[in-house]
Length: 405
Ligand SMILES: Cc1cc2nc3c(=O)[nH]c(=O)nc-3n(C[C@H](O)[C@H](O)[C@H](O)COP(=O)(O)OP(=O)(O)OC[C@H]3O[C@@H](n4cnc5c(N)ncnc54)[C@H](O)[C@@H]3O)c2cc1C
Image (cartoon, rainbow, N blue to C red; front, side, top):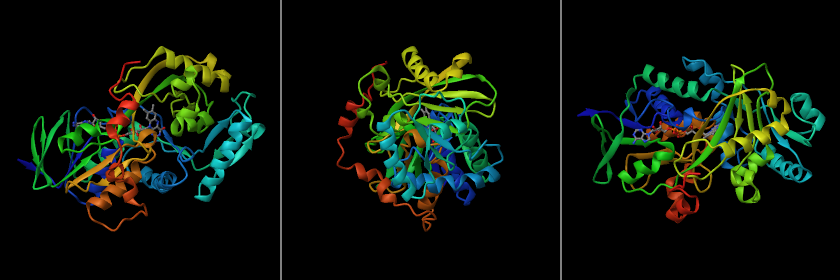
């Protein structure tokens, strides 16, 4: 039987980041991926390293610590991850939204996020393509962007460079425990003896949990994105709208029209090649990953209201990905008390790209029993915080067993 110190299950941005940090520390690590690297949510998402969309508190603190790691990663990884620190804006359409964002900004400022409110003219100076219908926007110079697929591949190649093994196209079928601790991992191509397993399976993390008797509250939240043909520079940095923040944290406040039922909140960004990514939805439709005409039309309506020039640009494709959503919107990270040697690194919802680097560092510290190099309260991220949660109720009320819509 093969053996390794740590098995990381999942070759998305999170699993690859954890494997990278462990291998860099000299730990013997094997990454197992059912399909290919970045074949899950990490290859079907946007590219924002967004701070402004994080709830002021632990969420924002993690993002602020995490973003500090990107400039070094750009140098360390043997891959152009296309990281740019070119700022982000949240567009405001109504006086009511302005008041809400004013408070949000104040709370964010207190935690160290540089962000300010811009009136309509100043917002349009930054983004001349915006329509005059807006009231203003926020602006943070700290928001950034990265190519999520290159980032994932960069972590993966980095891990291999430091000696990590990878088994791709292979599904983890079971995990064997002995006297309450991890003993081995059973895969489609043989068994691996190990004392540590990291569950980095995104929306599939609950299936790995079931193998060791854990009920993990992560459910899929679909997001649909439209991609345009490449065009000359039109969108600068990350653009979201105030509805995006509401759709993310308080969807119940959106109302009951079509756009609200689809959880539409605008996200716009332009890739290095010039393609514009237009998003998106936040829908609870189980594990269905197809796009729908209905949602794409609603997303486009919203986007062309803000940037009328989009009407003259051709769409080349659309895709959907599944955000791993938890009851409190925070990821589940670190040791799992009941099973020695079992760790969680999943549930990052719409923030996994931005939080990937810090997740790798935190998990590496925990697994190697190092003093934590980043000051984050891991208890607040543990699986145990959901001990009192009605997890089956959570799944049912969020349509986890999913009617296709
Ligand atoms: C539309 C959309 C837009 C987004 N935009 C952003 C953004 O702008 N910024 C941001 O920070 N985040 C964004 N996100 C969120 C981000 O994409 C996710 O949080 C992140 O990709 C999750 O990564 P992961 O590694 O946990 O999961 P995944 O990338 O899904 O990786 C999990 C892997 O586990 C594998 N796996 C599952 N079961 C097994 C098994 N039994 N054996 C072996 N392998 C297995 C899967 O094949 C998969 O490859 C967005 C998400 C969506 C859907």
